[in-house]
Image (cartoon, rainbow, N blue to C red; front, side):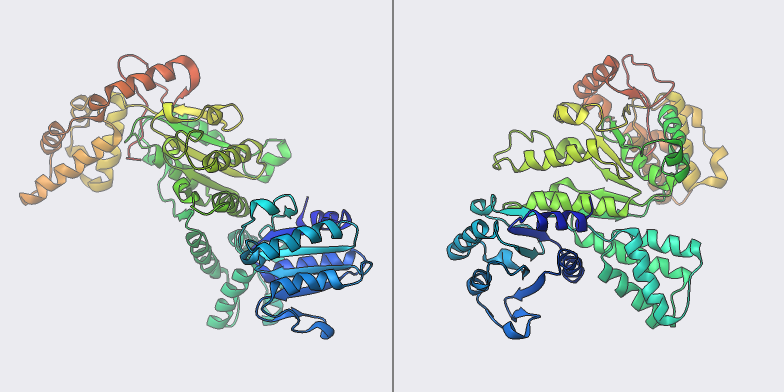
Length: 507
């Protein structure tokens, strides 16, 4: 159900107090005005703390700097007079006893009157004593048709037009931005060269990066890693390649649902994070990283609001890849935290969304310690699949060395004994192999020559692999994967004394 349909329903049902958290104040007021007009042309009254009531000449400036008087104004109008009262930034006054009591009294009286209070605020801050009187409505970011209409409106003012393909790309790039930001970035383009050009898509993407960065919850990552950068992991790569077209319109016509996501489990340094980046690059989707730690705030209700904001942005940007690194640390012991249940509610909101979402947001979560993961996260339906990423076998270590050396010495790759390097580095992870190559480069550079196979082996001899220092954790992960609770990422994997299946880069 769209915002317009739901808001009209609440008006007809005479919900007395509707709370709309949004930063798009102007667009929200326009949508509310349209709904009010369709519901019998109800009068619109708009109040803010500085200017009081506006819009009606008889009440211009009334209740300026007096929020209690603003509520008394509603009470003083005839009971039969329909109206919608928009109160801006009213969340700042809800803790006041007189305001809280007046709202609760109004909530009783307005149930039988064609009047509705709309609290328009940038965030959710509702005291517990008002929770039963207030109904919260999410105001979504603009849809692709709304973005297209705004771009068309701006283009009409310049007299130029865009090819359908360019317009589609521009609309897709602008998803996740507010209408105001779309206007701003296109106005910048028009001011620069008098028209909107295809290359201005880059300006929109930069504005999107700024917007996502300002949330301080999501980070916009430019994904440059490729599937070819992954050494080994044949099963996982085959799984990813098979789903490469799953976000296309042809897949929808075939009847395929959008893929939900992947959970990658393995010890540190096995390159699970590289997979998220490679997926986004290979599928040509934007990559966003969610820092779960930033969701939690000391203010009551703020953590839940941030969670909803992160979900809303991800869905607006979709199709996209949402990367959650080390999710085991983020939600470890979510039921036992002494935070009045905030972490449990945040976790509950997130996993419910993962199970029920229909938007094309592909979630890639990584975990190092399966023991810390809440069982609800491992339940079927949260992810499409769970893959176990372990240590590389000898063949995969050779491939990992080849990837790293081809990056730093592509013209001299044949000078390195890859078979010997792979044989002499048992139990090494992708991160440790990468570090051995870098250390060897330091050895050669300090002596004024190019580094050799012997330098790499010397550097490797100084490394104590994590596989030996974290033996118990590895054995537990080994047994967990062997029980059939996860698919092996490597086709050649055998679960003996050593885990296998590996990426080439650290997490």
